[in-house]
Length: 128
Image 1 (cartoon, helix red, strand yellow):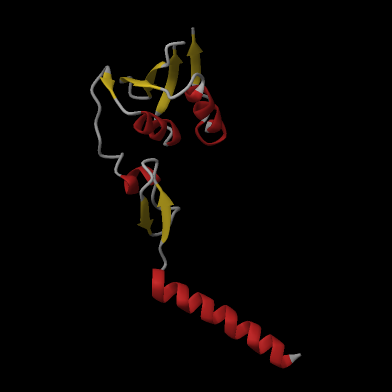
Image 2: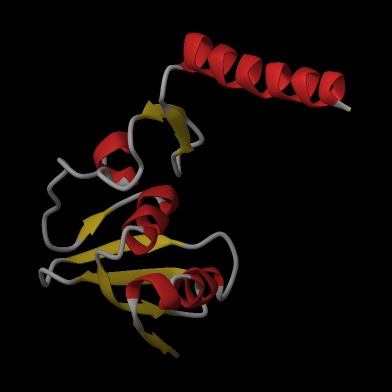
């Protein structure tokens, strides 16, 4: 029994040591653009800071990619979204900037906005 416990303890300590040697104390985030980025303590950083979206500034009525639009919603920067049947989407950020994009299929923006409600709060959704 003692021998089995010793082996289990060695395996656990070895796993933590190997993880520390190979990856340090860092973990990774999968950014919206598909890039995997290492980061330190996840409670001290937001994905936007690591994935490069934090420093981007937008102009009113700027056209952005669908991936950027999703990132802004996932990062809780969005206050309202509006979609048309022609797949045109307007995103209104919390700072009042309006951005335009095209969703791949109808209601994609609705599904994205609803998926972050628990994390970000309710995003006002409009459609025609």
